[in-house]
Length: 120
Image 1 (tube, rainbow, N blue to C red):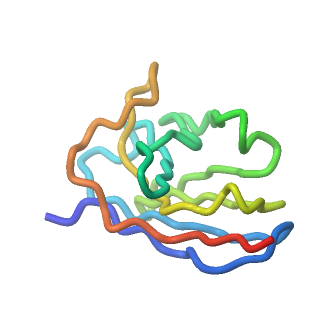
Image 2 (cartoon, rainbow, N blue to C red):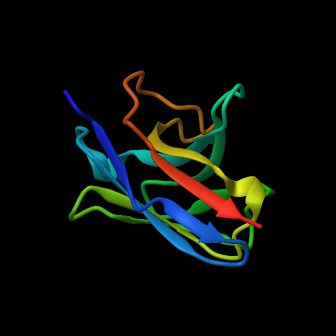
């Protein structure tokens, strides 16, 4: 069962923008907090941003002021608008349901992710 399908990644220049989208097949999507994560080779997946069931966003310090997370409960999707991209944003980006308090991912079956590459 495919729960998450991420899309929208690609190649961007430093200072540029990309918009990622995640389609989620989860029960009671609107009642769940959702999050974006990213991973680079040899490193653990790290939390980028979360959005509560009520639409309150939270961001990692590294992306605060540059990234914006949003959700569409009618379509069971979350988006990540990434502006002022930096080479260190290069990673594979994933989405998942998250715990409201900690931002920890709750489902073990991740999607395929979407690759973001930022050139300097």
